[in-house]
Image (cartoon, rainbow, N blue to C red):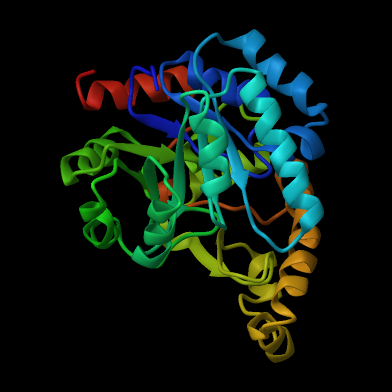
Length: 313
């Protein structure tokens, strides 16, 4: 991808503001744009937002394409976003939640590459069948929608596909980054570590919560998006609970009702998570177990240099 360090700043709703994406790329890694964060949270017209990032760095950037099939309108919007990104020179894409084949076809026409988020072998197989060029293996230490396998277990499940595999989850410093590469991963994707930076526009309360938390403070809750999401345990999370009710669970399992439920929870979570990330008085935040390595808010460049030093780049 033309980067110095095999390190990705994962796309985060709602924390991927243009300045953060650009800073990571400028430091020698690669920042990935999250389109809904760019437009809905941070208020940029989509193409203008991409051009703002390009004005801040001339180095490669990526785009996250969530390709869930439950909404025709959303699919059409994502197709347009991918096309515009290609027009603006983006050549690295990370897909998730669907069949990436149409993205791969579009991106390969201009020599780009597509990696796909996976949490277990069956999703990796579908991604490989769709023609992806690499896998982002989301393990059980990740923030947001975490997987269920350890980093070691997940790599063992997918390494025989012969594609580069990126470790996503649990990496907050140079030691864990080096450990992932030594394990056999081609690179790493970080999210939580890059929230606790001056370049990220998340609230100071969010950043303080990351700094003061440890791995045991991270819990999974279904109450935000309908599927387990890794968040920091707070009094609000404890009051809200971590599981959906029996009726919601039944609807999520229904063949005809599951897409409606996913759409309902997705729309609700867009509002909730936007407020939570920016509001200084909010008290629930997404984060992964990498909080154990995060002791302070640090500039992006310093974080990337720490990672580079750990592997002697």
